[in-house]
Amino acid sequence: MKPITGILAATALASGTAAFATDLEVTHWWTSGGEAAAVAEFAKAFDATGNQWVDGAIAGSGNTARPIIVSRILGGDPMGATQLNHGRQAEELIEAGLMMDLTEIAEAEGWKDIVNPSTLLDGCTVDGKIYCAPVNIHSWQWMWLSNKAFEDAGVPVPTNWTEFVEAAPALEAAGKIPLAMGQQPWQQGGAFNVILTAVGGIELIDKIQGQKDMDAAMGPEFAEVWTAFAKARDMAAKSTVQDWNQATNLVITGQAGGQIMGDWAQGEFQVAEQTAGEDYTCLPGLGLEAILDTGGDAFYFPVNDDPEITAAQKELAALLLKPEVQVAFNSKKGSMPVRGDVDLGTVNACMKKGLDLLAAGNIMPSREQVLTQDTINEINDLLTEFWADPSYSPEDAQKAYADIISRAE
View 1 (tube, rainbow, N blue to C red):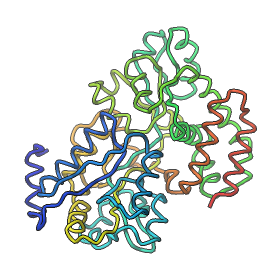
View 2 (cartoon, one colour):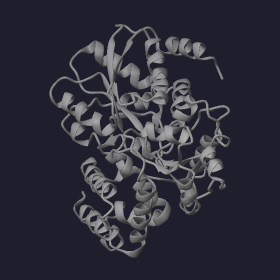
View 3 (tube, rainbow, N blue to C red):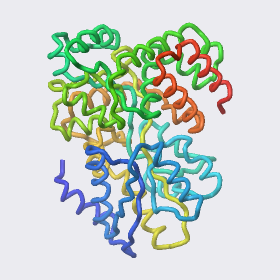
């Protein structure tokens, strides 16, 4: 692999010197240690073109950042570029004519031939036109385990969710929190979806979220999922941290047995200089359903009337999917590249598991690709209410979830 300095020089030469060196504000919600290291790779590559990446990081999660981003665009104060998740989040902005059409760039760069899986680019496409640049493949379908926590508890590191639940009493006896969880709706929402996939199975999640099948939503298989989620609630009762990376740190430091969190957690383990397979263990699909949901991040470019900014936007859009930039960014982020033709070199054991699943075609759409953000927010609010109230029964929660699905677009 080329040294990073060589990569950046090559990128600058390939892009050519910008006709107008332009400051471009880029908003995103990547603020943890691992995320900041990753986004810095984008900034370095863009700055090498002669333009200037003006970092507009918004502290908090996507749930915090998205309303701010949308409000600025609707209010006539757009940023130059912004992170969102590829899927249905930007539909209304696109329909209102507020997002730049990137089809010409996508065709020139051959995105349709290199983006894998193709559903990522489909998530950027509205009425045949491409409006975003997908930059990574993230999957929620992971559980991260602290090898030290289980060693301290005197039990083997689990190989699946069933064994994890069985090990919980030993973890508690050793003074450990069995399951780390932050106190934010999107975290409980994501964890529930992982449990739904692993315990309920891929066909059930498609019936409920994809087909909006009410019989499935009220059926006994989904009831088992709610029972499992209630058990997760019990195991996380003493996890009082707020942010996801604080929960990850409980695993890194051996204070908690495990965490259900997307593969971006890998960036935190890397920053902490922990080694996959030695210090921590990863279970795709909770060790029950070896599959990845192929969500991730994409960059959108709000329409503006400044030709210099427009030129810089187009330059950044093309740059984001360059092979060397994809490698530099995703190696730090813990995510997989959207290009199917890049070599990540030597990857850790967890990323190898993800790449093998991707290569085998063991993939499914993310929630963002099948449900609107309004529906996801409503589900997350329900799950947070359930999570915070031990008296909220799984049966009542299942009925409330089914009601949301019955009204989903």
